[in-house]
Length: 85
Length: 441
Image 1 (cartoon, rainbow over the protein chains, first blue to last red):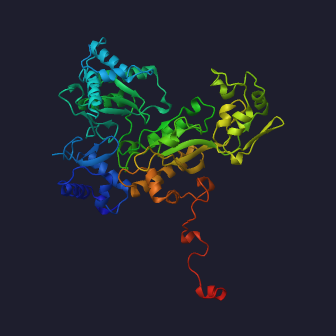
Image 2: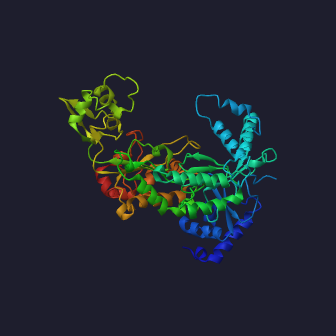
Image 3: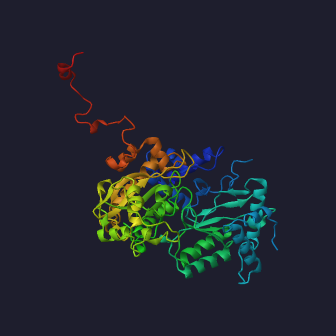
């Protein structure tokens, strides 16, 4: 596990900062997008940390039914009209 | 009196088959009368509005449902699918009409008490409309509102000892056949393996991190009653590696058309198919022609048997599955989105199902496949599509399985074999001077 992923506060800040930076164009992200934040870590380890952030209500799931995405809690439109003006 | 006129839906009741429209109308009426005095927690007329929005969709030729959203229960990333109607003014009863997936028991065994409790809960906190079962195998509860989700989840988990199923980019609810509980063809205990893997992979079921959906299905024999070979990313199909057991006396009873030995165990006896003909109905239908019947003796070249099950199905009193049983693992089946529908490809020809070591040989393969797919799979790419993109050889590499004849579907169609240096004796390095001693420039 990388030092960044191992440090809960730093990992959370990295994820929140990265998502906030992207928030002008999109508010929902695939799980694989987090690989860019933690390039040195294995997906299963990233999963544990990201899901902890959901548990702590920093992030939230968005599901279409077939695919699940992640967003910052409360960010963006909350149902399927996401992206419409 | 129906709340909405539904002339187009009414036509669907006129065919010879049972109609879901009739079922919905019946449910709408039950809710309107409410003879049991249920304190409905979502609009009483939601089923009327469900019929209304469906009628409007037929009229307009397009859907009036939006799907997707953040709805769910705390800590779970699956099991609830947000559904919203885009005509809430016309149909307020289905403005929010979420679906819940409930993990069906292994083999779909229920007690009537359990079913009563489940429907009581769903009448109270939902629309009362269910789908037994959805395509994945779950109990599907159709239609409730957001505030009811946690309440339903609490009752299911605390009072009914019942979990939600999978949805989204999760491991989906594993599904199995009845297996050894009812069936003499069962080569392993599907319910035990299904239950074990459901518990073992709770995190994968409820906390999504896969590129897309992933399905396990378990068939105890190659008859594939669950159709795992077509319906799951990883299918576990029972098989045997010794010989089909033959009772020669019973074979001859079938040949003599003894009434106590009906073909197919009498499954098709409501029609006169004429006298049983071993050559026509069994030997000539064997896909590898590995059977023969001489001097009242049936013989099978088991090395060429593909486990199609036909002969065993036709003469179940004479032929039985082998005794050294286990299962095959196939990967990559999917429905058409990209590249059309695919059947599973054989990855593990034979492995024993061994509960004593927590199915270690099986979980190791599963986890290797997941690691590869999570690392290399693109967003919304199924395992079968990744296998197509990177090659079956890559799948063998990541699972550490050596290529075997059983992996070859069609021999000699592709002349290219890409060897790696460590697979070739002497590697790539060679002494040019030594070579030139024998070969002139």
